[in-house]
Image 1 (cartoon, rainbow, N blue to C red):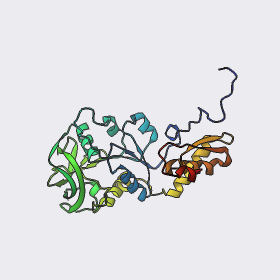
Image 2: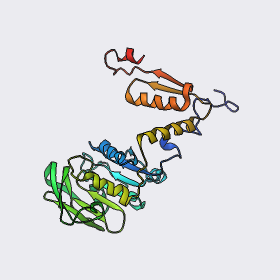
Image 3: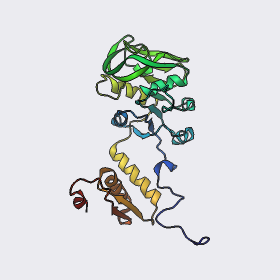
Image 4: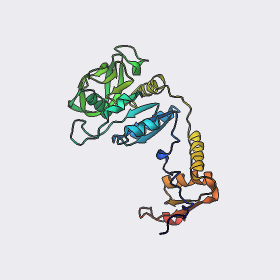
Length: 289
């Protein structure tokens, strides 16, 4: 291959990466959700977006530098199927809690937060999956609740925090979880053992909104239409006025939506190539073609 005066291909420019999270154009009013494998992670994102706040789901392996650059208004640590104290279980960098960004830990996320603060997580007396009743003790997450008020929540856990970790205060209890909610005494760190994102948690939306608006100060300015306009603008800026784009298209939702957004941004400079991935339904290839 020749070098020196050779010009780069117009299809791709290393100076303008096509991977959005490497771009400097990061959202300014967004919630970052770190996914520890919960069956409810997508539901967390749905609840946040229903409140008209933009959010993205990312793996917990994101570095502190990456998170600092992404500059979230708040961070939510999802639940997960692991035991937080097991060797090799997904974990969290303690430095995450020193960023000054509000953090909400849910279920497994709460246990990680407690362990990072020197707390103790132990197997519960019985595994809990289903409705439970908590008693509110106070705290900013429960600003709309009276002290000692009870409410129904959805639990799904086999471990729990055994005692309030140093620097935190108790905000909720239940019969099976002596520590069902905590918040830091001076930093914007909050956690609950239950799942406020699940519809069975009677006032879960109120708790999520308290985190988004009262604690994070997020603005309810996001809609799906706003997302389309923003992404089309980002694609157009990334590709520029002359480059062409190739899109592998299987006919599924993901590739079809991606193709539609890019086509809206650059028009006939997009070339779609049909990819039969071997997993299409009967006659679906003919329908796509």
